[in-house]
Amino acid sequence: METLEHILAAHPFCSGLAPERLRLLYGCARNCRFDAGQCLHRACEGADKFFLIRHGRVALEIAEPGGTPFMFATLEEGEIVFAGEPMSPCSWLFDARAIEPTQAISIDTACLRGKCERDYRLGYEMMSRFLPILAKRLHAARLQLLDVYGKR
Amino acid sequence: MGNANVTADAPGPGQTPQRYDVVRRQREFANTVTLALKPHAGVRPTFTPGQFNMLYAFGVGEAAVSVSGDPADANTFIHTIRDVGAVSGALARLAVGASVGVRGPFGRGWPMQAAIGTDVLIIAGGLGLAPLRPAILDIFAHRRRYGRVSILFGCRHPKEMLFCRELRRWSRRVNVDVQVTVDHADIGWHAHVGVVPTLIARVALDTRATTVFVCGPEVMMRFSINALQDRGLPARRIYLSMERNMKCAIGLCGHCQFASAFVCKDGPVMCYEKIADMLAVPEI
Ligand SMILES: Cc1cc2nc3c(=O)[nH]c(=O)nc-3n(C[C@H](O)[C@H](O)[C@H](O)COP(=O)(O)OP(=O)(O)OC[C@H]3O[C@@H](n4cnc5c(N)ncnc54)[C@H](O)[C@@H]3O)c2cc1C
Ligand code: FES
Image (tube, rainbow over all chains, first blue to last red; front, side, top):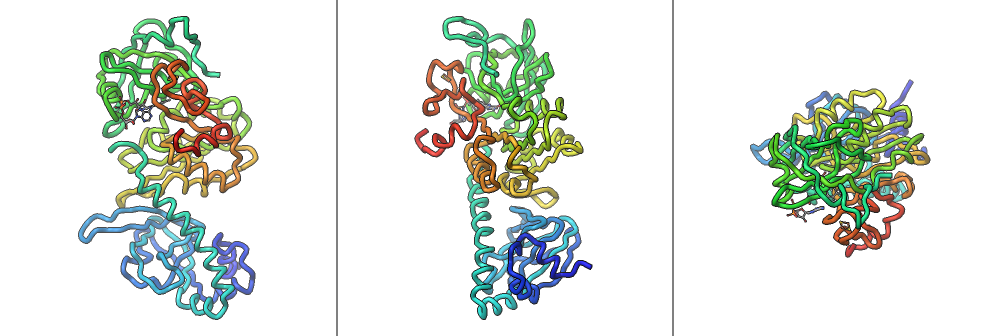
């Protein structure tokens, strides 16, 4: 049978993670699923978890108070939904909404943070996985801001 | 391949605009139209996917515009034009029945021959899909010559999706992977949101045998090249369609100079391996 530990190990975020670190991460992990239209989290809520997407598609949205939501990114299988600072307490700045039935693994950030503080090598391992994703998203956001497709 | 049959001292179709009539006009979205042009007399010359014509809006001026139609349609030239200024605006406003001057086709197109036997990855941004459409249609017409075919297309918003009906039709083909993304969308949109290079990480890619055709704004092409190289794609397998301001289109005036090359006759399609150094120089 496919256990959560196997599912976690198969996610690209965990690729190459040593078995003892994977076990530590597993201790903070839970399986979750969302129907199309259901929110994974809402802006301003405490970011007490992040999500590793297994299947489906999640939209990141920002809405002006009273305005229509503006979708600025989608994330899919193999990707990760996290607030700007996955390793320190913070709040979500945007809504994340499943636009297809979505299966994910949620990781409790307080639980993981505690383990990282006790084991700096785990902390380093996590940061070196988050940073390239952050950098890629920053580059993509800059390209989006450049609005390169010609005159309106 | 592809160079127009023209020399500097032999006036011909390369130097004298031929009269064509607008026989169809399709509005794609705000400020962008597709025109079908039929020669007033005779037949239209053949063209290679990726080549362009110089279109002359009588009394206003000339602009380079890629051929966006099917190479197998021998009657008309199809061009997709965005109104960004005086000439393109005059062309985009032409009604059915109006006349236009056409010189061409010019330039080197996509390496259709070199791509035979390989997988083909097509990456288009915005109006960049126009010069790629003849290549896509040619690939579909000779589908067995190629391995896996993937098309990645990005634009600003779902309302600015060029050839949206065709994209939908292509995505229903079993032997083509079509992925579309927009920079931003309203909630009703169910496909990708994000810039085109983010799709490159998601596409199946055999780095040893894939030919990549990229066309779009230069910044988007640079980001796409980075993403392709992150995946191990060698520079010699990446082809870009470059745009420079054109005047003569036959290698005489120097307006389109790109370091030691002229985009009008050495391009517009160029192999990334040959131009990587030039692309990195801001002054070029
Ligand atoms: C090989 C090639 C293929 C092209 N294919 C198409 C096509 O399929 N459809 C289409 O709509 N346009 C295409 N273009 C661009 C088109 O030639 C220009 O938009 C046109 O020349 C603008 O002229 P204008 O008088 O309307 O605008 P201008 O008043 O001259 O300029 C308006 C704006 O467009 C910019 N511009 C002008 N010329 C170019 C150029 N060559 N490349 C990029 N930006 C330019 C100017 O900097 C300015 O910001 C192509 C250009 C080349 C070189
Ligand atoms: S446009 Fe004159 S040399 Fe290319």
